[in-house]
Length: 282
Ligand SMILES: C[S@@+](CC[C@H](N)C(=O)[O-])C[C@H]1O[C@@H](n2cnc3c(N)ncnc32)[C@H](O)[C@@H]1O
Image (cartoon, rainbow, N blue to C red; front, side, top):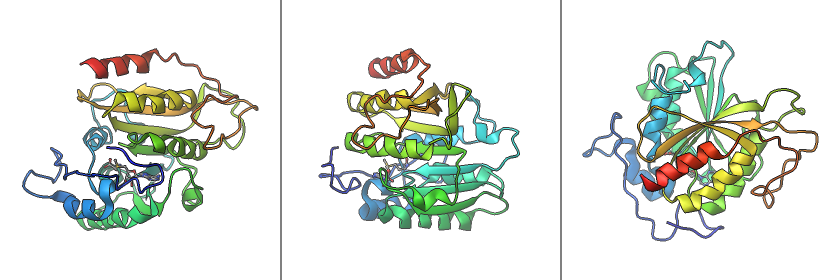
């Protein structure tokens, strides 16, 4: 699947996708749960539920036997403010909202044309859900453009990403938005990492194309793989920004994929390289 950089990323040429039936959810092979067929017709790629959702739902469930444990279910009493990028049907983030108290906030975001899908998902979820849960909002947020639409909900404690690494021309705007959302208010003076935690679930489809994203992403963010899920091609990483110095400046879209001055990168690339080698050959 490929698409021209300026075309609608949700309708690449020859799009041919079908609803996904996730085990352990309301979906069955016979029932088009979440109205995916109609949503695919209207929203293209955004209308489908994508494979990494199952792994992310597992991670976003209290008591999951995964390492590291999800920090959203720790003992902290401070409210969580969670932002999701590229939400689409938003199964995993709405599942999360069901686990969190009313004092927490979950903000779904997507391209402006896809926000009605997010809103419909919230409405269906609200109708199903009883009792206490986090407050959920939907807002437009196109990667690479300004983040004004979500500022009122920040600063965020967590950022969710589910199956967003697939079209190489989207990597620079996605990375730029991740940096903008995690920018420090002042230069951090201690610790190797800082800022909100990014929880990234991703299913590899073509490592040769995906590697450039992880190569650039790893220059700005520490990645910790979540272990114990026994997933096939899905992976979850918990990520935080590497410390920056006074020299750091938010790079432009054109520069964002290249190494930038002012980032204090502490990790070796060995861990992620091992993971990639394993995925490639297993
Ligand atoms: C593969 S789908 C994943 C949807 C959902 N997270 C899931 O896992 O089911 C990619 C999502 O990214 C969104 N997206 C693509 N390009 C985008 C952009 N430039 N800005 C914001 N969102 C974008 C799409 O609309 C779509 O919802």
